[in-house]
Image 1 (cartoon, rainbow, N blue to C red):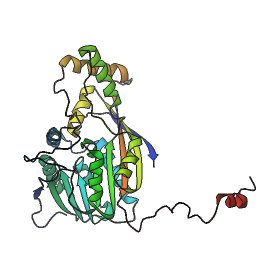
Image 2 (cartoon, one colour):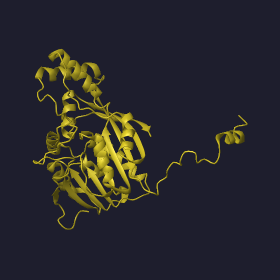
Image 3 (cartoon, helix red, strand yellow):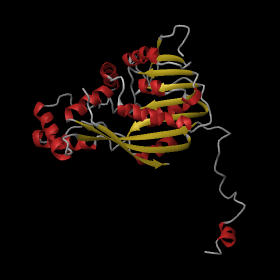
Image 4 (cartoon, one colour):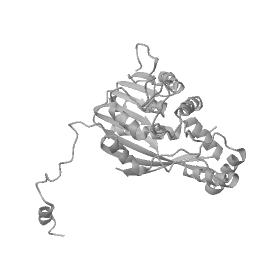
Length: 343
């Protein structure tokens, strides 16, 4: 069943398969920032339930459509940035999130020769491995790894993360790990959901819970704001940081179709302190309020997805740098005298 009617976007600028063991999957149990004796991640900052997040990705691999217009659009826009670079990236790492869409839409961009596909979910990695048979005319040596994006003990020319990093407990720390996983002059590309995502659903959930339960509980995960994206790149130590923002509005026949789509993408609530139960009357009230407040004349409801694209480079001597303060040889007063006298 077709779950949405239309997709449109508003944009703004902020500035081969392996021949030996071709479809093997590697496991890295040490891929975490801090582990206890049971091998379970123990981060200082605990916002999301990483174990439940892995189960979400497992379910997403079962429900995922072969082609999702929204996910494909985000992945394609992210990979477009490779076409703006004259530099090639022989080795690349693709982190958890929309792995299958990134691999399918890569189409030779970046001149990648060796690619590692990594996710915390074995089922998601297996889905990508099985989909490798359908990719034609690309001689890319692809490896598949089950691991955690919060610790990356490898070195690559390119790190790509499409709709995955916003689920990490320590986003600045995860971005630092991405920088450390890059070789000098390596490129970091990421797309995360921004704070304006699902604002209609947030409003409908809040009103419904206040009416039916007399209080509210978090139903939508906290997300980074646009103003924080540049600071995150700088804090992580990236040079030449760049931030772009796209706003997608997807229309669905009903709120239930929206929830179905979120489950298929693996984007439902994974907060550590979430309320695991949602009363039937609250869910029905949320759908009714959503329809009454936001429905269009044709009966469809809109859902806003704000996508923040981030680019950054690992420092290298060949990169352009700002001159040190006080090193100018010409003053602005002299320039004004020479070129501004006619104004």
